[in-house]
Image (cartoon, rainbow, N blue to C red; front, side):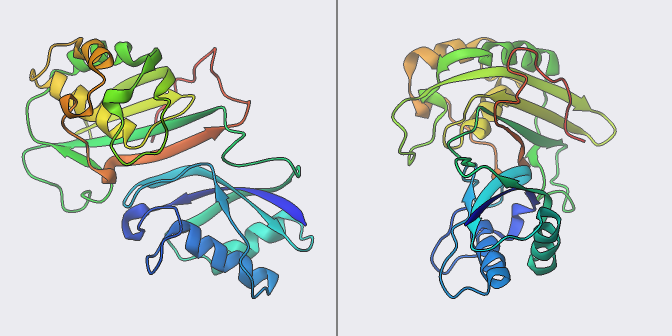
Length: 262
């Protein structure tokens, strides 16, 4: 059995998330179908992801691995997968990995982007690819507030119910926002060693409320202390969230990248 590592991108609009679900269209499901077809196998070949994305969430650089029953050159595997996958999923890179590589358990960091479309009315052409905020915003307040996310904190107030992880302590290496005036968007970017269920979407929700004056600029510090999800309130919609990159010991944890989604 050879282990393949691949980097994939997908439009999450028509998926019920990454993880396999009964009678639901999922990213893992279409990947496993393609891998099984290439292997000409009647039994399941498990495709492991670096993490689970929810319904409607997109990926620019999700990482997967799977064990394959015979050797194919990595370039041939990439070509074969892309010939079988639906148009809303693409394999961007593929290599033969070491037998002990694991897409989920070997991660050292992840980078997410969240796009917010500004304007009173929802843009029908971007509704599946951005969040939406119709209220006034002071972006300078958001920029200041985001500095409070950087560092190691207990993110209990920023974790949605339903997650199974009890340890809510995470380290955020960078949290930024860029105002794209041409497209009338705010582009948030978060880089950390790990993220909890809905954590990025809740962080964005809190930041937007700070920008709108509904919260004090440093309310994030209070939310760390209260450890109460209900006090964080708003969760930004899934449509604006993108998993940008997954790190495996190659992350700039001590010299953070300044690139932004484009």
